[in-house]
Image (cartoon, rainbow, N blue to C red; front, side):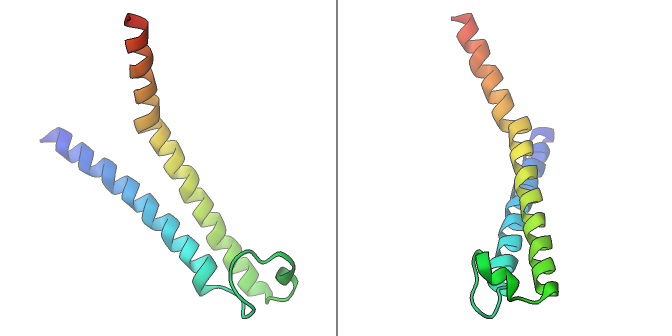
Amino acid sequence: MKYKLILTLHWIIIVNFLFEIAYAAYMVFSVLKPPSGGGPLMHRALEIPHELMVTRRLYATECWIAIAGLAIYLAITEIGPALMDARAKKAHE
C-alpha cells in the first residue's frame, strides 16, 4: 500500500512537470506570439511591445525552471539509483 502511494506521488510529480513545460511553451509560442508570427523573435524583438516581450520572457523562464526541475528530479529518483545499481552489479561480477 505504501509503495503504491509513493509510486503514485512520483508519477504525479513527473506529470505535473510535463504539464507545466507544455503550458509554458504553449503560452510563449502560441498565445503570446507577436502579430508578425510566433517562434523565435530574432530581429522582430525590436518591433513588439515591451509588455509582450516581458510576459514572453517570464513564461520562457517558467518553462526553463520546470525543465531543470524535471531533470533534477529524474536524476535524483531514477537515473542516479539506476547507475548505482548497474555499478554495484558490475562490481560483483
